[in-house]
Length: 78
Image (tube, rainbow, N blue to C red; front, side):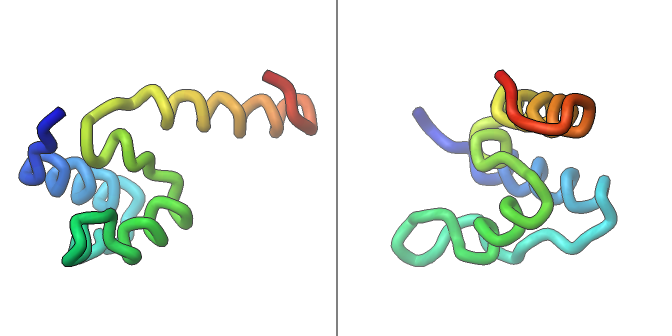
């Protein structure tokens, strides 16, 4: 699977602009792994690495569903 880094940067910028924060400066570190600032951004603001790098929204949909269920039912659940 090939990652289109231009598209990944565009998705990350879109996400950051949508929630009104600054996007991380780097996607990957010198070793080719996700940059620490990207990992922090995703953890803090709920962005999915799958979506950033691949455009796969399934993880964000699942996470949003889980949060909605927890708010509605006050706990875990599928």
